[in-house]
Length: 192
Image (cartoon, rainbow, N blue to C red; front, side, top):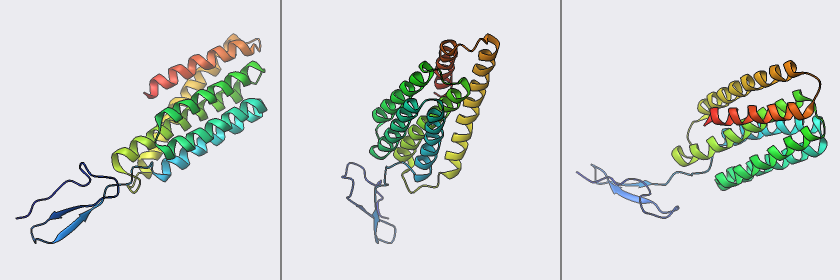
C-alpha cells in the first residue's frame, strides 16, 4: 500500500506533489488557485455599481468616491488583500459623508450605503472563499445566499434608519447623515 501526501504542504505555489497510490501509480496533486471565485467578484462589483450610481445621483463628487471604492474592491479582490478592501470601504464612507454634507436625499444615501456595505462584504467573503476552497470551486449558491442575507440585513437596517429619519422630519441632512452612519455601524456589526 502506497502513501498519500496532502497537496501543496510546505511546497511552492506551482510545485506538484507526487504520491504513490495503492496501484503504485504516480498521481499529481496541484495546489488550488487561491484567488476569489469569479461569482463573488462579479456580485461585489454589481453591488458597488449600485452604490456608485446612487451616490452619483445624490452627489457627483460622492458618486466619484464610491466609484473609487468599487475599483479598490476589484483590486483588493485580485490581490487577496483585506487591507485594500478596508481602504476601499473607507473611501466609500467618505463618499457617503460628502454626499450627505452636500444635502443629498436620505433615500439615495441609504441605497448607496447598503450597496457599499454589501459590495465590501461580498468582496471580503470572496477573498475568504478563495483561500478556503479556491477559485475553481462551485460557489455560486454560497455567494448568492451570502449576498441575499447581506442585502436583507442592509434593507432592514435602511428601513429602520429611514423610518427614524421620517419620524425626526424637518428635512435636516445632518440628522439624516448621523442616523445613516449609526445604521451603517449597526449593519457592519450585524454582518460580522
